[in-house]
Amino acid sequence: MKQPAKMLVLGAVLASAAVAGGCANYYMVRDPATGNTYYTTDVDRAGDAGAVRFRDERTGSVVTLPKSEVREIDRYGYRSAVGSK
Image 1: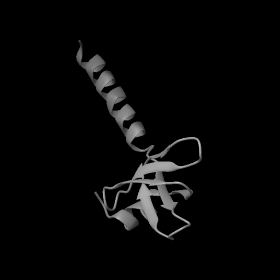
Image 2: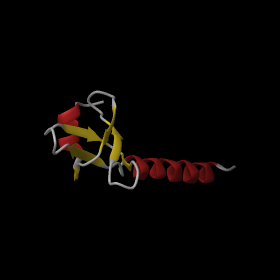
Image 3: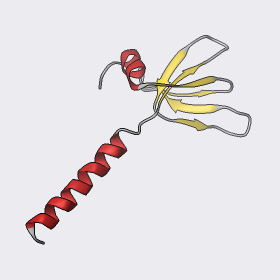
Image 4: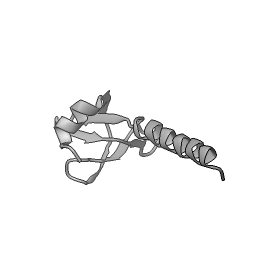
């Protein structure tokens, strides 16, 4: 492969990585029954009853809540809550 073609491929790979890395979603999940607040980057449905399952970034625990309030937050709010990693 010629040098200009290599640079073009490298540029495309780096651009793809930058776009993929910048598209993370951050969530604050609140348990209305206890008032506990959790922070995560991924929330999954856990069954048909509306329960959610996620990994709490502060403790590393997998949490399942039958009822919850899920709110998307920005990266800065997320990082201040869980610390920079």
